[in-house]
Image (tube, rainbow, N blue to C red; front, side, top):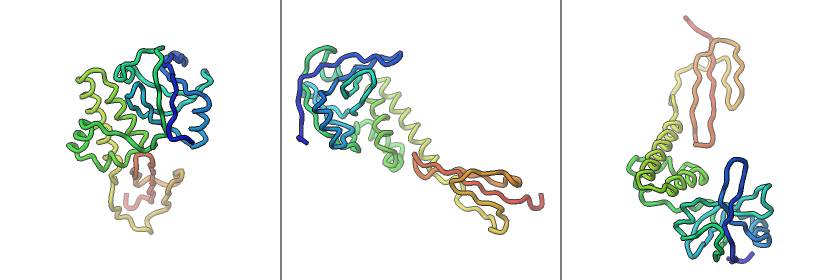
Length: 211
């Protein structure tokens, strides 16, 4: 696979249900090369402005494409339906360029470890929401929402109960990863989350002793 591809392209509207997106179709031979290499994201240079974008497919268009927003077009000084020079190459799917104000906000909230535990897709979505704000006030609001979300994740990652003083002989059933079927009265049900994408429900059941 070549290190870099270039072509003259044009952004065009893509109607999908009740929504309309702005997409840049990728020539078939270039898309085939990326597919063969397993690339899911590409580094795209639009009029010498670099962007990290996801390769996408849709039943309503024959070519693979990258989808963008108006803020991206404005920053690259691109008008829809305008012929532009495009250069692109395979991107590291885990790489994310962090804006300084987002980094500062995460550090100030002592959430760096939790942020690092999020999946690349989740962090990319949160940063994209901040980066596409059209006004400074909106950006500040979205960064605050980002911090609020990450703080909730941190709370979910903490063990709800660290130590259970329950004798093994008192436990009728202890279920891990399975579905609990009630047989006697439920004594304790504990939910904890080890990572943002992996939640476990542990059920601890024992007979009622002494009421």
